[in-house]
Image 1 (cartoon, rainbow, N blue to C red):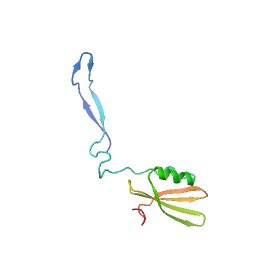
Image 2 (cartoon, helix red, strand yellow):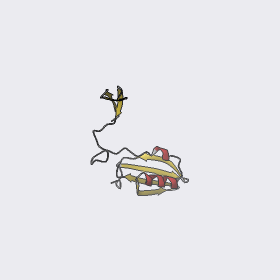
Image 3 (tube, rainbow, N blue to C red):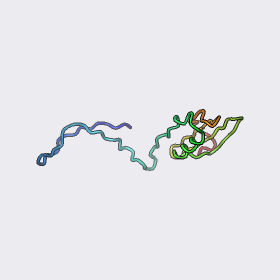
Image 4 (cartoon, helix red, strand yellow):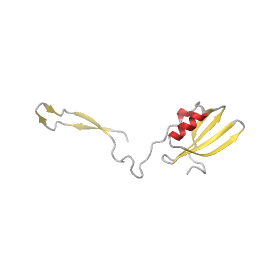
Length: 112
């Protein structure tokens, strides 16, 4: 959920210190971060398109993805990655040492 504004009013004055009227941004606190069952934001993958394949492998690891399967057809390699925190199942299509596409494929038998 997005933050919302909450009215802020003058509470007290002490000498020359006082709280002014206005608004304050209050973050959503309905779901504490790190609590069991808290949803994790999906990891970004769109920036991998066109990236060097080896660098993309390092980036996927830094984003907590694990390589769970790899398929090769001709000069094209299809790598399947799974992120246990976000439950994302991603396929990177690599050709000519570059990522041709990065796609969230939703499911794969080894994405678990």
